[in-house]
Amino acid sequence: MPVDDVSVTIRGDADVVAARSMGRSLAEDSGFGMTDVTMIATAISELARNILKYAHEGEIVVETVQRNSRSGVSVVARDDGPGIADVGLAMQDGFSTADSLGLGLPGTRRLMDEFEIVSSPGAGTIVTAIKWLR
Amino acid sequence: MPVPILKQGDCRIASIQSALTDADMLDLRDELSDRVGRFRSKGVIIDVTVLDVLDSFASRTLRTISQMVRLRGAETVIVGIQPEVAFSMVQLGLSLDGVTTVLDLEEGLVHLERSRRARAARAGG
Image (cartoon, rainbow over all chains, first blue to last red; front, side, top):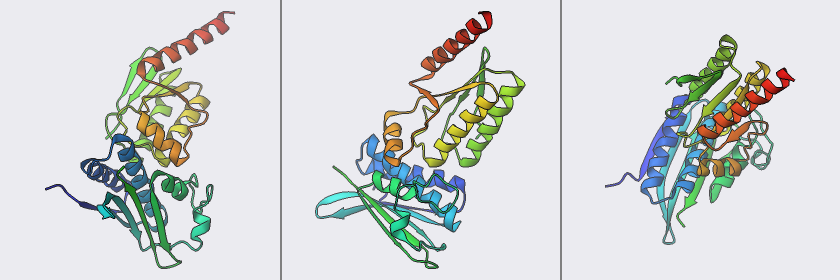
């Protein structure tokens, strides 16, 4: 019976490696090819990094999803951190509030097929990113 | 896990063996900068063949290493970026601008040897 979801608590840099490695295995088991698997693993890495940088602690959940006879993998990054005041601004290339390259969220969106952020100041952030099997 | 650093003539080869944490990457940066000075190395090769992800932090650290090593008087070559890793880096918007990258270890050694000859020719002329 293949695993259909994995969850990793993100508290330190070793957890970033663990999250992307577990996500990679799940994506491989779900039938994704190397290019897609690498994009999913890279997206997980960036989302886990954002958790560490802005919220210091959170969780990454990777699971298989089905919708309208399509299947794929969803990555959910959840934290109770400061939240994002202006999600539209955070999605612009080059925008960053912490010391970073400022390409985290828009770059991560380009790696995945669907990308949604739910966040408001003080209420934490939930990012959901999905990649569909072709 | 620390990255083994091998010696090859006046070059140092950092041969990454497994996924690295951020702390491992920063240790590698410090170790290479130190060794370039201690052994008067002229070239550094970082072999990333086994890395299945090069995210924003890893890319930034590779760029920092390359700049630090240059300021210490040596040249860095990154070798072994896998095709799917390269594709993800481009999608993410990472370019490694200003960093020398070549296909594999063999080409990296050729590149550094060519630089060494060019230096010798300048010194001789």
